[in-house]
Image 1 (cartoon, rainbow, N blue to C red):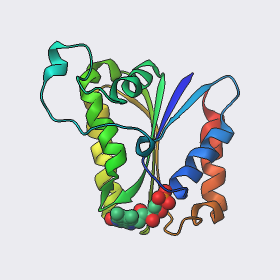
Image 2: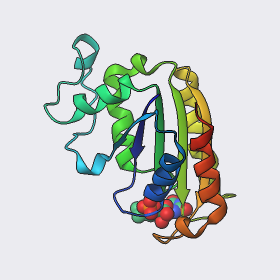
Image 3: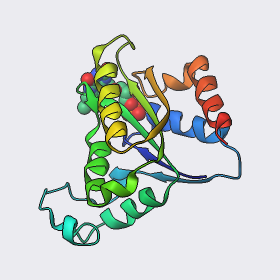
Length: 175
Ligand SMILES: Cc1cc2nc3c(=O)[nH]c(=O)nc-3n(C[C@H](O)[C@H](O)[C@H](O)COP(=O)(O)O)c2cc1C
């Protein structure tokens, strides 16, 4: 499979750990691309609607090359820290920009990895899960997993053996 992973964190912390461990579990036959929005030049969606009668986004930045990768993927893994009870602006930026090719994201396999600084009974994880469920329903996604982890300091997740083994197994289980 061609798997695109979107890293919603700018720091080398828990989200990156989760991405790397999941990636470690994946078989060599997969093609993997990690998108780091904070290292790209992507303007937020202006809602101009020009994309609806134009091929792609009119912004002359990294938007179209990034969205091309996502459209070409068989599977998208969305990974984000919790920021203010929701996903990070970095991840939301990319999701918003997918609007220009929205329906071409139909039927994708999807995985979601969320890491927050509060225990997993916090309502924030349900809110985020519901948001992804709505997107999945709209775009007929096949959500293969949605994982939420409690990790606050940069290296908390790398010290959570259970989380690491779970994430690696999720990678191994993909065919
Ligand atoms: C701007 C900002 C907002 C945050 N808001 C929340 C929040 O609402 N709930 C929460 O549990 N943790 C919150 N956190 C903590 C992060 O989710 C937590 O530290 C996470 O592990 C960061 O992931 P990272 O190491 O991949 O960047 C926030 C952190 C930042 C920087």
